[in-house]
Length: 326
Image: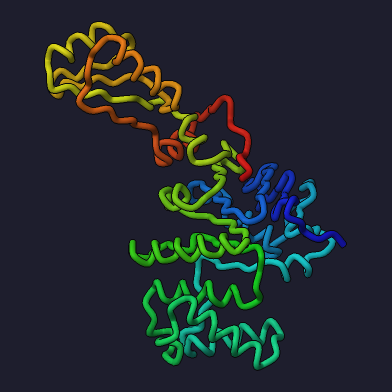
């Protein structure tokens, strides 16, 4: 039986396929997630994000024709039980039982993992403290706020000490403060060497957390890379020079080519991918001409632009980046 090493990916799936009737949900999806990183799968509603999570977490089976899938070094098809022992899953909908207390939810999960009673109580106490739920531990979970329930849900997932965690839209419906608290928890998990497979509808969440992002559309990966690599796929980046001296503005506008003028604000927009090389070129040009801009700002497409471009009805994106492993 193979075991995961620091050099092997936590998740490796080849040609992932799943159809329901004549509806193809996943059409040959390849996924590789390095150990100890956050991987985010983005896509519109119905793109197949949750289906991918369910397959990789052994909840449903892939269709015939799917290639090998390895989770934590274990073959999903031949050793699903070992895969289950290596993973934790927090789904879109909370698994918390509102009729019992937070502590009782934790102890129930410890029993399901067949932990000795003393170890189960110690684990529950430590996790409740880690997730700032100690004061509420004796209260029915039905009295918890949305953010508290999601923290309890994730704490329950961690009872078995999984090294790979699937988080399927974990912050949906949470207020901004609760979302940021959840982000901090995810960062702490990854700093401890845990691998996180994250699906989310919040693009800022993927931008904030993910080491690598894949955009799923029409059952296939439309593009994959770091957030910065994906942003560079989309045109529209530019450097904006703003002037207070009309003469300097006019001189720069005449001298520069391929520039968009804004005479009202005395601003010039120069197409740019925001790279260090291009910025240095612009600064060197300003120095050589003696023209002084009062303000220089770099504007690059954000993940919203990327998402809409990649999931549009007629998307074609050349030169997709290779996955960045770090």
